[in-house]
Image (cartoon, rainbow, N blue to C red; front, side, top):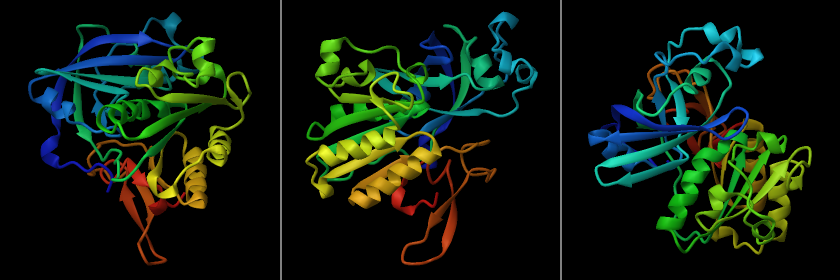
Amino acid sequence: MPGECSLADKGVFSAAVCANKQIGQRFYRLKLEFSGAGAKAFGNSKPGQFAEVDLSSAALPPAENIPEDLLDASERKILLRRPFSFADVTAQGDRTFADILYCVVGPATLRMTTLVAGNSVSVIGPLGNGFLVPDGKKRAVLVAGGMGAGPLEHLAKILTADYPGIDAIALAGAKTVKQLPFEGRLDEISQQLGFSLPEFAKYGIKSMVATDDGSAGYHGLVTDCLLEWLGKADLARDSAIVYACGPEAMLARVAEIAKEKKIDCQVSMERRMACGFGVCQSCAVECRVDDSNQTVYKLCCKDGPVFDSRELIF
């Protein structure tokens, strides 16, 4: 199982808010600081793992700052924690800083926008299983669809720091350029050299952008961009791996492409996860049983969220 961790590696911790920066119309980047046992636990977290954040006490923004489509939903009480993966984790001495990339889609993330430096939040984690880097890999392709960019940014950092022998590239897709969850684009010269996104360029990783409407980069689905790139790349199948995170339809297509190309592939799935550690059983994922026509349901929060794409049934 990719990136497994034990129950002893996780807990309930208090994190201090360092910053909460808006980077797009509905995109934000929240920086948390952990100390003590929390710093140790999250300092050892793996890309693709996640945390459950308590937002029940966060305030609503002023009425004029609430999107019209969320006016009714904004008044709902936040009873359950919300799961978030990390876009970056940095351990510094006895402190660990973790970045959460999030999009305002409902009452919880709406309240999340009001967190400011000095606030504290309760966090359970790190949870689940993250991405695994098998031995012998030389090329890695990171495929992000929309908000799936977060854990792949974290993975990009780890690949650069711990696996210098792996040459990586990131492909990021969205419906339009405004729906790409990044802070900006690099200058034209950098883009001509293959470094489109600062979030990956800072790790020395090249990147490509795909938009459904052609408003930036490749005109079409990021999965079509992947297929075209693989057709041009000189890849040794056994030494290559694809990592993907995004909408399920995108993940299904990435898994199909990887199967056709006979390339290893790991995908990060998304489900509604009320507890985060396997008690509520609400995040079932249908999986194949080896050497059998039978299937079994695994839990996204406990067995995932990262799975080998070959075991998933989409």
